[in-house]
Amino acid sequence: MKKNKLFWLSFGLILSIVLSCTSKVDKKGRFLLKGNNELKEGNLKGAIDYYDEALAIDPVFKDAFFNRGMAKYQQAKLVEAISDFSEAINIDNAYVSALRQRAIAHLDFGENYKALEDTESLLQINKEDGQAYFIRGLVQTEMKSYEEALSAFNKAIQFSPDNAELYINSATVHYYRKDLDAAIADLEKAMKLNPRESKLHNLWSLIHFENGAYPKALESVEEAIRLDKDQSYYYNNRGLYRLYLNQLEGALEDINYSLKQNTKNYYAIRNKGIYYFKKGDMSLASKFLNEAYKADPEMPLLSEYLPQLETDATQE
Image (cartoon, rainbow, N blue to C red; front, side, top):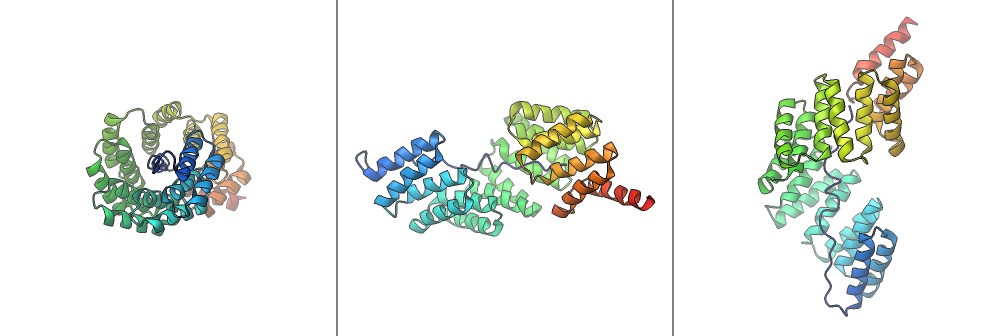
């Protein structure tokens, strides 16, 4: 099934945009504030233009580099964002906000070891930086170093015991390790802290699916969608549960919607293969299931369907 997405998107814009300037009459400071206002309004290009003006006045204006990096991060221009965060860090190697955000950008870009290096720098500055442990947990999860990820999340929880997101991320790692009891224990803690968090209900749905409770899985993911209609992977999960409840056309609609949002969602591609398998179209089933296999041979459910396709082909 589709992996439960960790809370790195909600953590993406880690800190408030730097708002201060040396004085109201300081020209570079005015450009910085104008850029911040544009950023708040969602005008990323306009914000970047103002930050460029500030940097033209002061080429070592670390806050302008940081904020421009934030704008470029929101544009998904990760290489440029990382470059700006690095410029800010070169000016001030103890710039915590830039180190945290660069670590997240490295993670998004697939540069896991560089992200870990940034968390090391953060912990050298402050051994009690809970956000650094949180990022480390995200990176270790991406690297499938699950014991290390759990250790990092537990450290983060020590500093923020009332943060539901941390328990959900810890539960997600337990889910990846197939330790459903531990995952449920963390989810119950998160539920007490914030029952309206959509990712919590999505993970409940995955656990129900693992237990074969398909109606409960569907109910939970529909609650996740009710709370957050913009997460395409919720729809893919709903499509999967509908497949197992024999609601095939509704399932295909959900899967196609998810693929429209992200054509490289290989879990949705796998689910489309399962749809055609259930429809009896083994040619298309093979096409999509093998495409998913090439992307991730260890993807769950593939081992259930691909051997059946091979058996059918042999019998023919």
